[in-house]
Length: 115
Image (cartoon, rainbow, N blue to C red; front, side, top):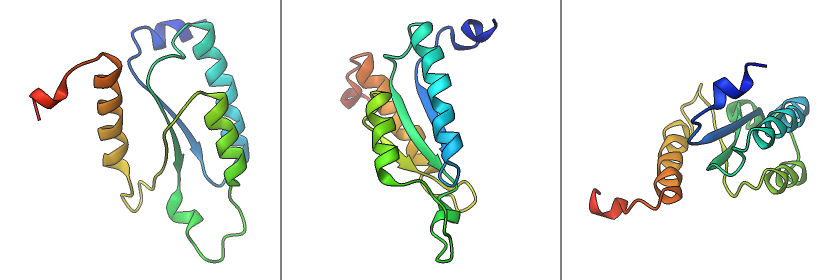
């Protein structure tokens, strides 16, 4: 399997799912299991719900309930959940800023000296 080659040297992990598709959230279980198998599950992680622009629409009857998202946060040992929309540019820059901060903290880098 090529998966170990893809994640070798992984510093941070974005676990991304579609806020309208429960199957995409459930599919993250497979990816997380691969991270565990390859001993990289302890890296900084952010859970990202995409297509927030579609969830915000008033006539939308779909979406993933908060309890399912909270269960995933717990299962994946993730503290950060961010809803994004690439279409409306919602929180896109923020997820990268947050990941950089998490990486610096993970490596105990004193980033106050450079800011």
